[in-house]
Length: 267
Ligand SMILES: NC(=O)c1ccc[n+]([C@@H]2O[C@H](COP(=O)([O-])OP(=O)(O)OC[C@H]3O[C@@H](n4cnc5c(N)ncnc54)[C@H](OP(=O)(O)O)[C@@H]3O)[C@@H](O)[C@H]2O)c1
Image (cartoon, rainbow, N blue to C red; front, side, top):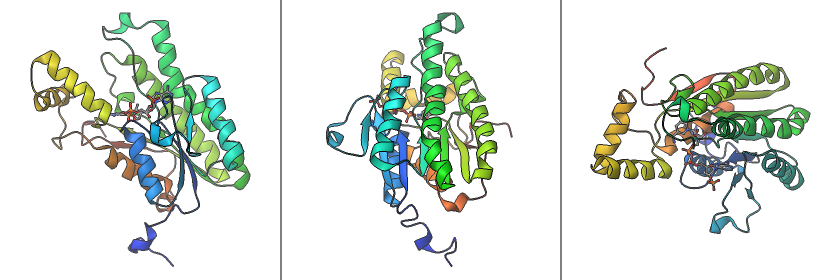
């Protein structure tokens, strides 16, 4: 019998698994999750609006805007046709493009798009990909939320509310699906230094008239400080996801896993 101490337990532990990770490009958390789960032996399909050159002929890439029902329908249809379904679904796409300026600057359109991207995309993909999972009697779903679901941002109120709804929905889904062999959990990252975050820090540095490290420190201060003293790396989030989708976490169901270097001070 394989035990947790055996190295072989971790290597190729996802052999034969079909996985969908949404938003696996652009040097973000999704890209790190794709790499990590591929290393574990899984066949990993990913999606984005823009097709990276290296994926232009790949069967493992589906171009779609996930914030529309047409986009999620395209993803579900192609996956069912090509692979018959997935064993593991990581709903990673999310974010906020709402304008700054507080609550009065947020128009209906901003709220709507934020909820489409951060909540309804996951709801639609779960609904589309659950039938074959239910039929086989096993599967794993991970939703990427955010610490902002408990710590609303000044200019990202719609994003925070959408992520809070995603956490709440995930709990209900986990309870309904656990007796049917499907585990659902959420991962709530704090400040993760993705390629997009690097670009944001560079823009902040220009605006503040400081250097990269100064702008990063400013960002960390705006979060009330990060006790570990640094931002997170996408690979660190991917490692947590790799654990949650593996059999090593077989008894973990319906819980939110915060990965934030200690930003959230409450229990
Ligand atoms: N980075 C952080 O500090 C942080 C903190 C807390 C939570 N999170 C959460 O972690 C997840 C990943 O965030 P990230 O920062 O890694 O994102 P990112 O670097 O901006 O990457 C986003 C990925 O999603 C794709 N994408 C974005 N909008 C899309 C859309 N409408 N339709 C289809 N694909 C779309 C992007 O490709 P295209 O642009 O080509 O579509 C890219 O592949 C999100 O749910 C985010 O809310 C991140």
